[in-house]
View: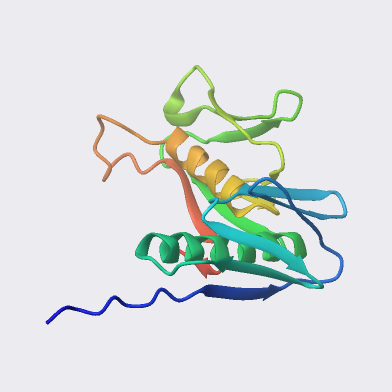
Length: 188
């Protein structure tokens, strides 16, 4: 007895967006613009994306395992892009110093964050920032805001990694800069 082949179903999804967002789909790339913010993302040629009124239509001819994964990821990315342009994303980081007071300074000309006197080090720790991410420093709290969740998350993780302590006991040396709030949840 032969197994019958399962029919491949089409995948279709419509995602609504606000009227202030301009969307352009060209050569497997989605570009969304609102006021002075712009976000772009490339997508797989296995999927078809089109704009119909105030809805983005994502579709696929087949419903294979691979295409379902790509389809779900693209839906999430598009929703994040729309939410980022409408509301924006915000990360908060806390600078903790037990031994030596940390001084934070933003060098806007070179787009860098300077961490001075970390663990009493004479040389400043320098973290490169990404354009499109706004940074505000209030004493020992760093706030990152961006329309692109990936850029904001990347900058937050780079700051946290930039103050990672190696070859010392973490129970004693608890200094560092740590992410305390991400979009949608608080960590502490």
